Length: 434
Image: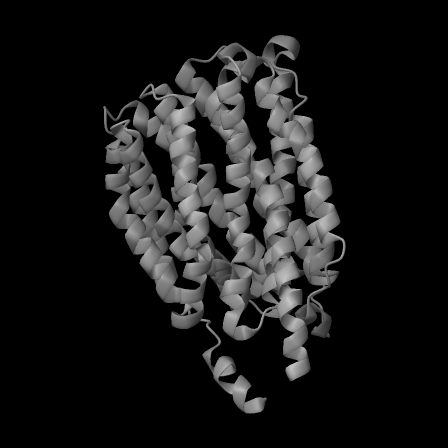
């Protein structure tokens, strides 16, 4: 037993670091599109629309990435359950990276007409397809290597990746916004972060080339022939509950990071630099608290943290939109931070919770499909619905607060119906066995 423990710690550190880096790169690819959609894609690719309609159209192409994510989780989940978690990490990173670089080369509407938004739509779909496989592979590889008593902590490392990817994507956008004129940014500056994705993808592939396959996968004797069919037949209720439960996390995150960016710059007249700085500062707080919340999940259980995060989200959505509507940087930062702390209270433990809900032979498909369907419910629709509601909501967009609160209550009900999975008996038994 002592030998196993000696090997386990360094290998877990390397595995967690590689998973974090990989998810950061893939979410950088995904987030850089959301920021571009909020700032410039509307007038460049939908110039015949009004400003609000153009933003809605840009967010529509943004939402296509979320629609593709469940399809990606089905495709890559099949590979993960049949061939292993490790191949998923390489294939999904290649697909997402290549489609992101290609987005940076798409000509605008004034060059090729309607083909421009169609190409945008296709590449965004491929981007979402790759990201749909990424989460399941990265999380499962980490969670299935981790010791039971620290599973939430170790599997929270891939969950820090989205925060790092967001900061990286928006840091590049912020630097370009500050260094370039509006005309330069609209002409070519917005493309630079997409081109940078190629170098990041190569770095991620190098990091993931030496990862070992999940021991839980290697222990499976009877692999599911068609994992999706088995999940649909025997675990459909669980998939729907997890999708509904996770919807509020996606809704909160994209309300803060995507919709509020467009609302602040277009409706409130706040500069891009100020809005990006406020949002990025709140994301730093969220990322820093992720391992803390995961440790609480290992100590007190997954479900209590999820219920607490949902409740906090339901209570904070109206204050958040009121603070945003002030246009004051410090108050906006406070509103964003409260929302993202509520979000990470749930999502810090999700990487351990979802895999524990599914049996190993269909775990990659089941967990990833549930996770990404939650993205469709919460992430794809929120920027579109919130933009439409805010257009007719007066100075303070109370309709957005009501919409987000309703999603929080739906998710709270779904979490209440899910079981607890924290492996308390295993943790208690390990010292006796050793």
